[in-house]
Length: 247
Length: 82
Image (tube, rainbow over all chains, first blue to last red):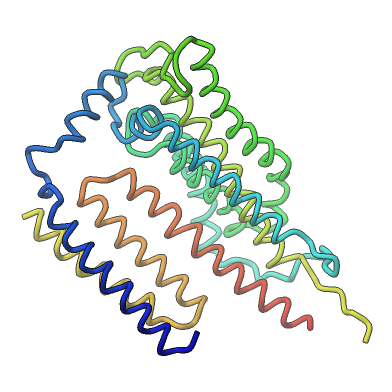
């Protein structure tokens, strides 16, 4: 396909998309309008299940199966990236590359923020049903927060607190727990991923039935997955060397 | 005037996105992308979507630039060894 054909094809596609998109956007309900059918259906349903964070109620309860799909996508992506970045036949892990000592300011900043980031991550995960955030957001905060140890300290320090197998187990356990909670809904005599647990009192830590449980499961999976992902990138950037092939 | 604030942020997001595209050097682009992610999450907060804003900050401002920077470093390292 030559350049002109590509350009014509692109312009055709872009043109049609632009027209359809603008037409569709004008058909949307006004921003912040008083009448909103979907909101009127989903907000009462969320409050009915003692879940003040309506987004979490949507994600883990009303659309629990969609989230199972997303959980699988994260699992598969991490697996794929780890497979692509594993040591190739001509690669060896050697001594770590020499690293300049971090600036004192970066060290101070990192070590002060490390515990803050970890506590914040756990907080976002376990309060997913009450306040903005949830398993995914909290999991990413936890995983990236852990890497402050690399920014402030060294790769060696990071590796010592990060036995990678734990994170493999965490990712698998989180994904498995999501499916198990789904199946438990069937065992309880309802549908797959039904919110079958006692709902508790709105606003309490232990409330909202399966929403909080699934949020923690996703948090475990995402935190483990992102750590594994970043570990592969770090290994390639710091300690992998290619063997010279004799010529 | 909350709507004015939304419009101003929309313009900032458009300017930021253009800057990301116009930055050609990958490691510099990763940093610009992180800044753009912050603008985008500000827009999400103004549009009352704090959950999306949190995801945007975590993924767009932390994980993605970090992966790009590590990739740039790994490529430089492997080139040196050749």
